[in-house]
Length: 544
Ligand code: VG1
Ligand code: CO
Image (cartoon, rainbow, N blue to C red):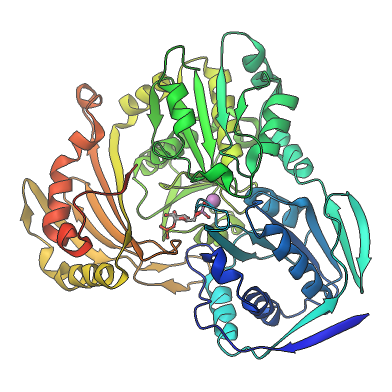
């Protein structure tokens, strides 16, 4: 066995963002770049000797190469066993499920999620802890600190591992186990949902659905679960073959990028139900026939209907949503008499609440929904949850959402993204807002009165850690809100996100167009933040 210790020098830009370290493939392909980061992770893990690690990714370009390197580094760093998905594939929620199922020490997930892939695209890496969830900030900060001083990494000299064949093999003192990426995840889904009832719905001839895997990681999962186990006709899953460049597409399930799906659901003889997932399978978009469900509403609908689903029939401990997510779920929680928590953006902030049993469901406005079944958001889980509700209620998606609004009122909601703007100008915009924030309180802006304006800071109710500067919020006396923050997942320039929300209790106004309903808030956002001036853009790049 030949373990080599190689000298290296730090890269100073290995700071993990909202969800791991994301950079262009070209950056990751620099000699020692991946090795430095992986060694920095390993160096911060006390007690890794002999432990089990889970490893897999979303199949994008550079996935296979990175996996070979990480296996050899795990062998040289004293791990006992690595469970790796066949072909190097594991969706993010499946990786979380496998870490928990095998009681692994942790896991490394290779993905840049919804960012485009391929040689010219992005790559990413993140570490998940033994609860199956993204490493909390104190861990990512320790990794970053280590990456700034690292001077050596350890790697075993060994031939590449055959990732196509299931089973065990040894490299050095490490056991590598190539596992089926779908199996334990599919079993977990079967334990939560009424598969018999969903099967009846999907084979009744009265109901058609379409699932768009966007040539990303959910292809094998969706084929196995929706078509093979639940009996949906073949062809239900479109773009189901994972490709290294996602077929040239942008694997972000929204109305702009999931165009194949949107065309079908808004076309003639549209199916009853449509859904899409992102690069690594943790996001979901839910559509009815000619009808879009905002992710914030989706969380609220799942919360209100959880009693219809076997895995949640015993009741919900509470719900949590990220701060920019609309407060639709808060209204359901209030009526149900359960707690609703508000966390900063990013799934890592839900981990403690889930581990402590304070919440059962969580969600983000960015097409992410999940529960205590794993510690990541979970795209296919959300689709199965919706299918279970549809099978029980025998109503259309649109009817279900409209009756939800009738009962709870409607939170009109939209996010305006300005992608790839100049990073310094974007920072200036935020600083300008931060400086003006104290003066806004009490002011009348158009017909809205400002109730509060602050830079969101969060104290974790479980470990009392605090996270500051999580977004500028302007709250109005009628419950409407505007939130500004900069993305922590982009790789080029900066992305400004503007989140807009207004509440409408009156059912006769629920059919208004969303952008129309939010038009005054959109004007106020421009007036307060001078978005055009700072971004030098006339309009957002993406509106969701
Ligand atoms: C975005 C979303 C955030 C999500 C994160 C990771 O982060 O806004 O809600 O948790 O992506 O999702 P940001 O910092 O760019 O706004 V994924 O599916 O990209 O891992
Ligand atoms: Co994702």
